[in-house]
Amino acid sequence: MRKLYWIFLFVIMMNGLLMAPFTQAEYADVVFNRYADESGIRPVIFPHWFHRIRFRCKVCHSELGFKMRAGSNNISMDDIVDGKYCGMCHNGVIAWSAERCDLCHSGKPGLKSGIRGSHETGGPGRW
Amino acid sequence: MGDRGEANPGSMAYVLCLVLILIIGSLVIPQVSLAGERPPPTWKKLAEDGLHDPDNLGLEELQEPGDALSTLPVDKNRAGNQVDWVMALQQEYIQPRTNIFPETKVQLLDLDIIMGNTGEMHMVRFPHLAHTEWLDCVNCHDEFFKPEVDANPVNMFAILVGEFCGRCHGAVSFPLTECGRCHSVQRATYKGTLGAQYLDTTKEEILKMLEKSREQSALEPIGAVDY
Image (tube, rainbow over all chains, first blue to last red; front, side, top):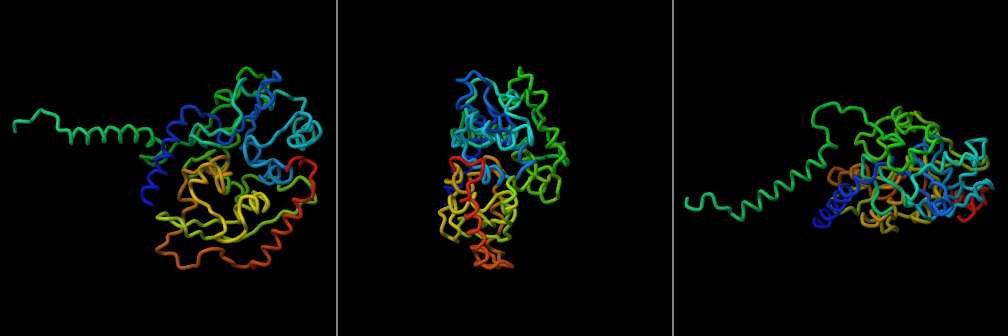
């Protein structure tokens, strides 16, 4: 058991050391690039920190149906314009509408989809 | 005395080990305070965070993390967003909305679970209250956790690859470097029982709550397509 504990500590430390130089984003930022690059628009950066100041997790992850795993939500602009997913709030009433492309599609071209760590913690490993 | 000046393989290995420890230490230690008060935390600007495109004109309209997060209580270990989100919520630094659909029933549950199968680590106290303030019952039950003591094969390896608690911890909620926040109950001094710590809520009431929560999630919310 003691051996497992050290292996576990080692994995966490190496993860932190190896990931630290590459991850600078704010903890829990999510990159959406399933369709963006191939459609010629910047990938979406979703900041969890911004949204959790305004909404509890349950609003999006229970009421709006976002699954709690990066990559498992297949979201198209049609859905959003129809008022689903992000479009429930991003409709020009609660938050800016889908016409404000640049505010969500704000990432560097070519970013890989997925959830990121932070410049402080090194962030998640395989998430 | 004759072999003075010659390298002793044993002491060489010792010195190498020391150097290695120093190198690793110098990378890790800066996170630990050595002299009193730490300066307040800083957050990367969006244009410098490696994700946002600095050429995007829309960037100016977005809120900078530092502008919002510097007004919230600082996380004691500066982990994650460097914000103590639970304290921010409980002390009303933030008032995030609980629901969008008026018919959604917002449920809280005050029930701690003591998990004793933690090897040599302290036992885990899982507080439902802090979790249900953010999450709905159906976020975890029954998809990731059976609502039953000892029915879930939770272990750190599964958590590290994003299962069980690792769905959120390590990704959005505080990261997995924060061992002591979950492993907080000392086995030697703990006088209570393992499992659910029923206080004011009976098991029947809790199961009823969960049933209600499942009924709600069965309603088709406007936003849900593939849930």
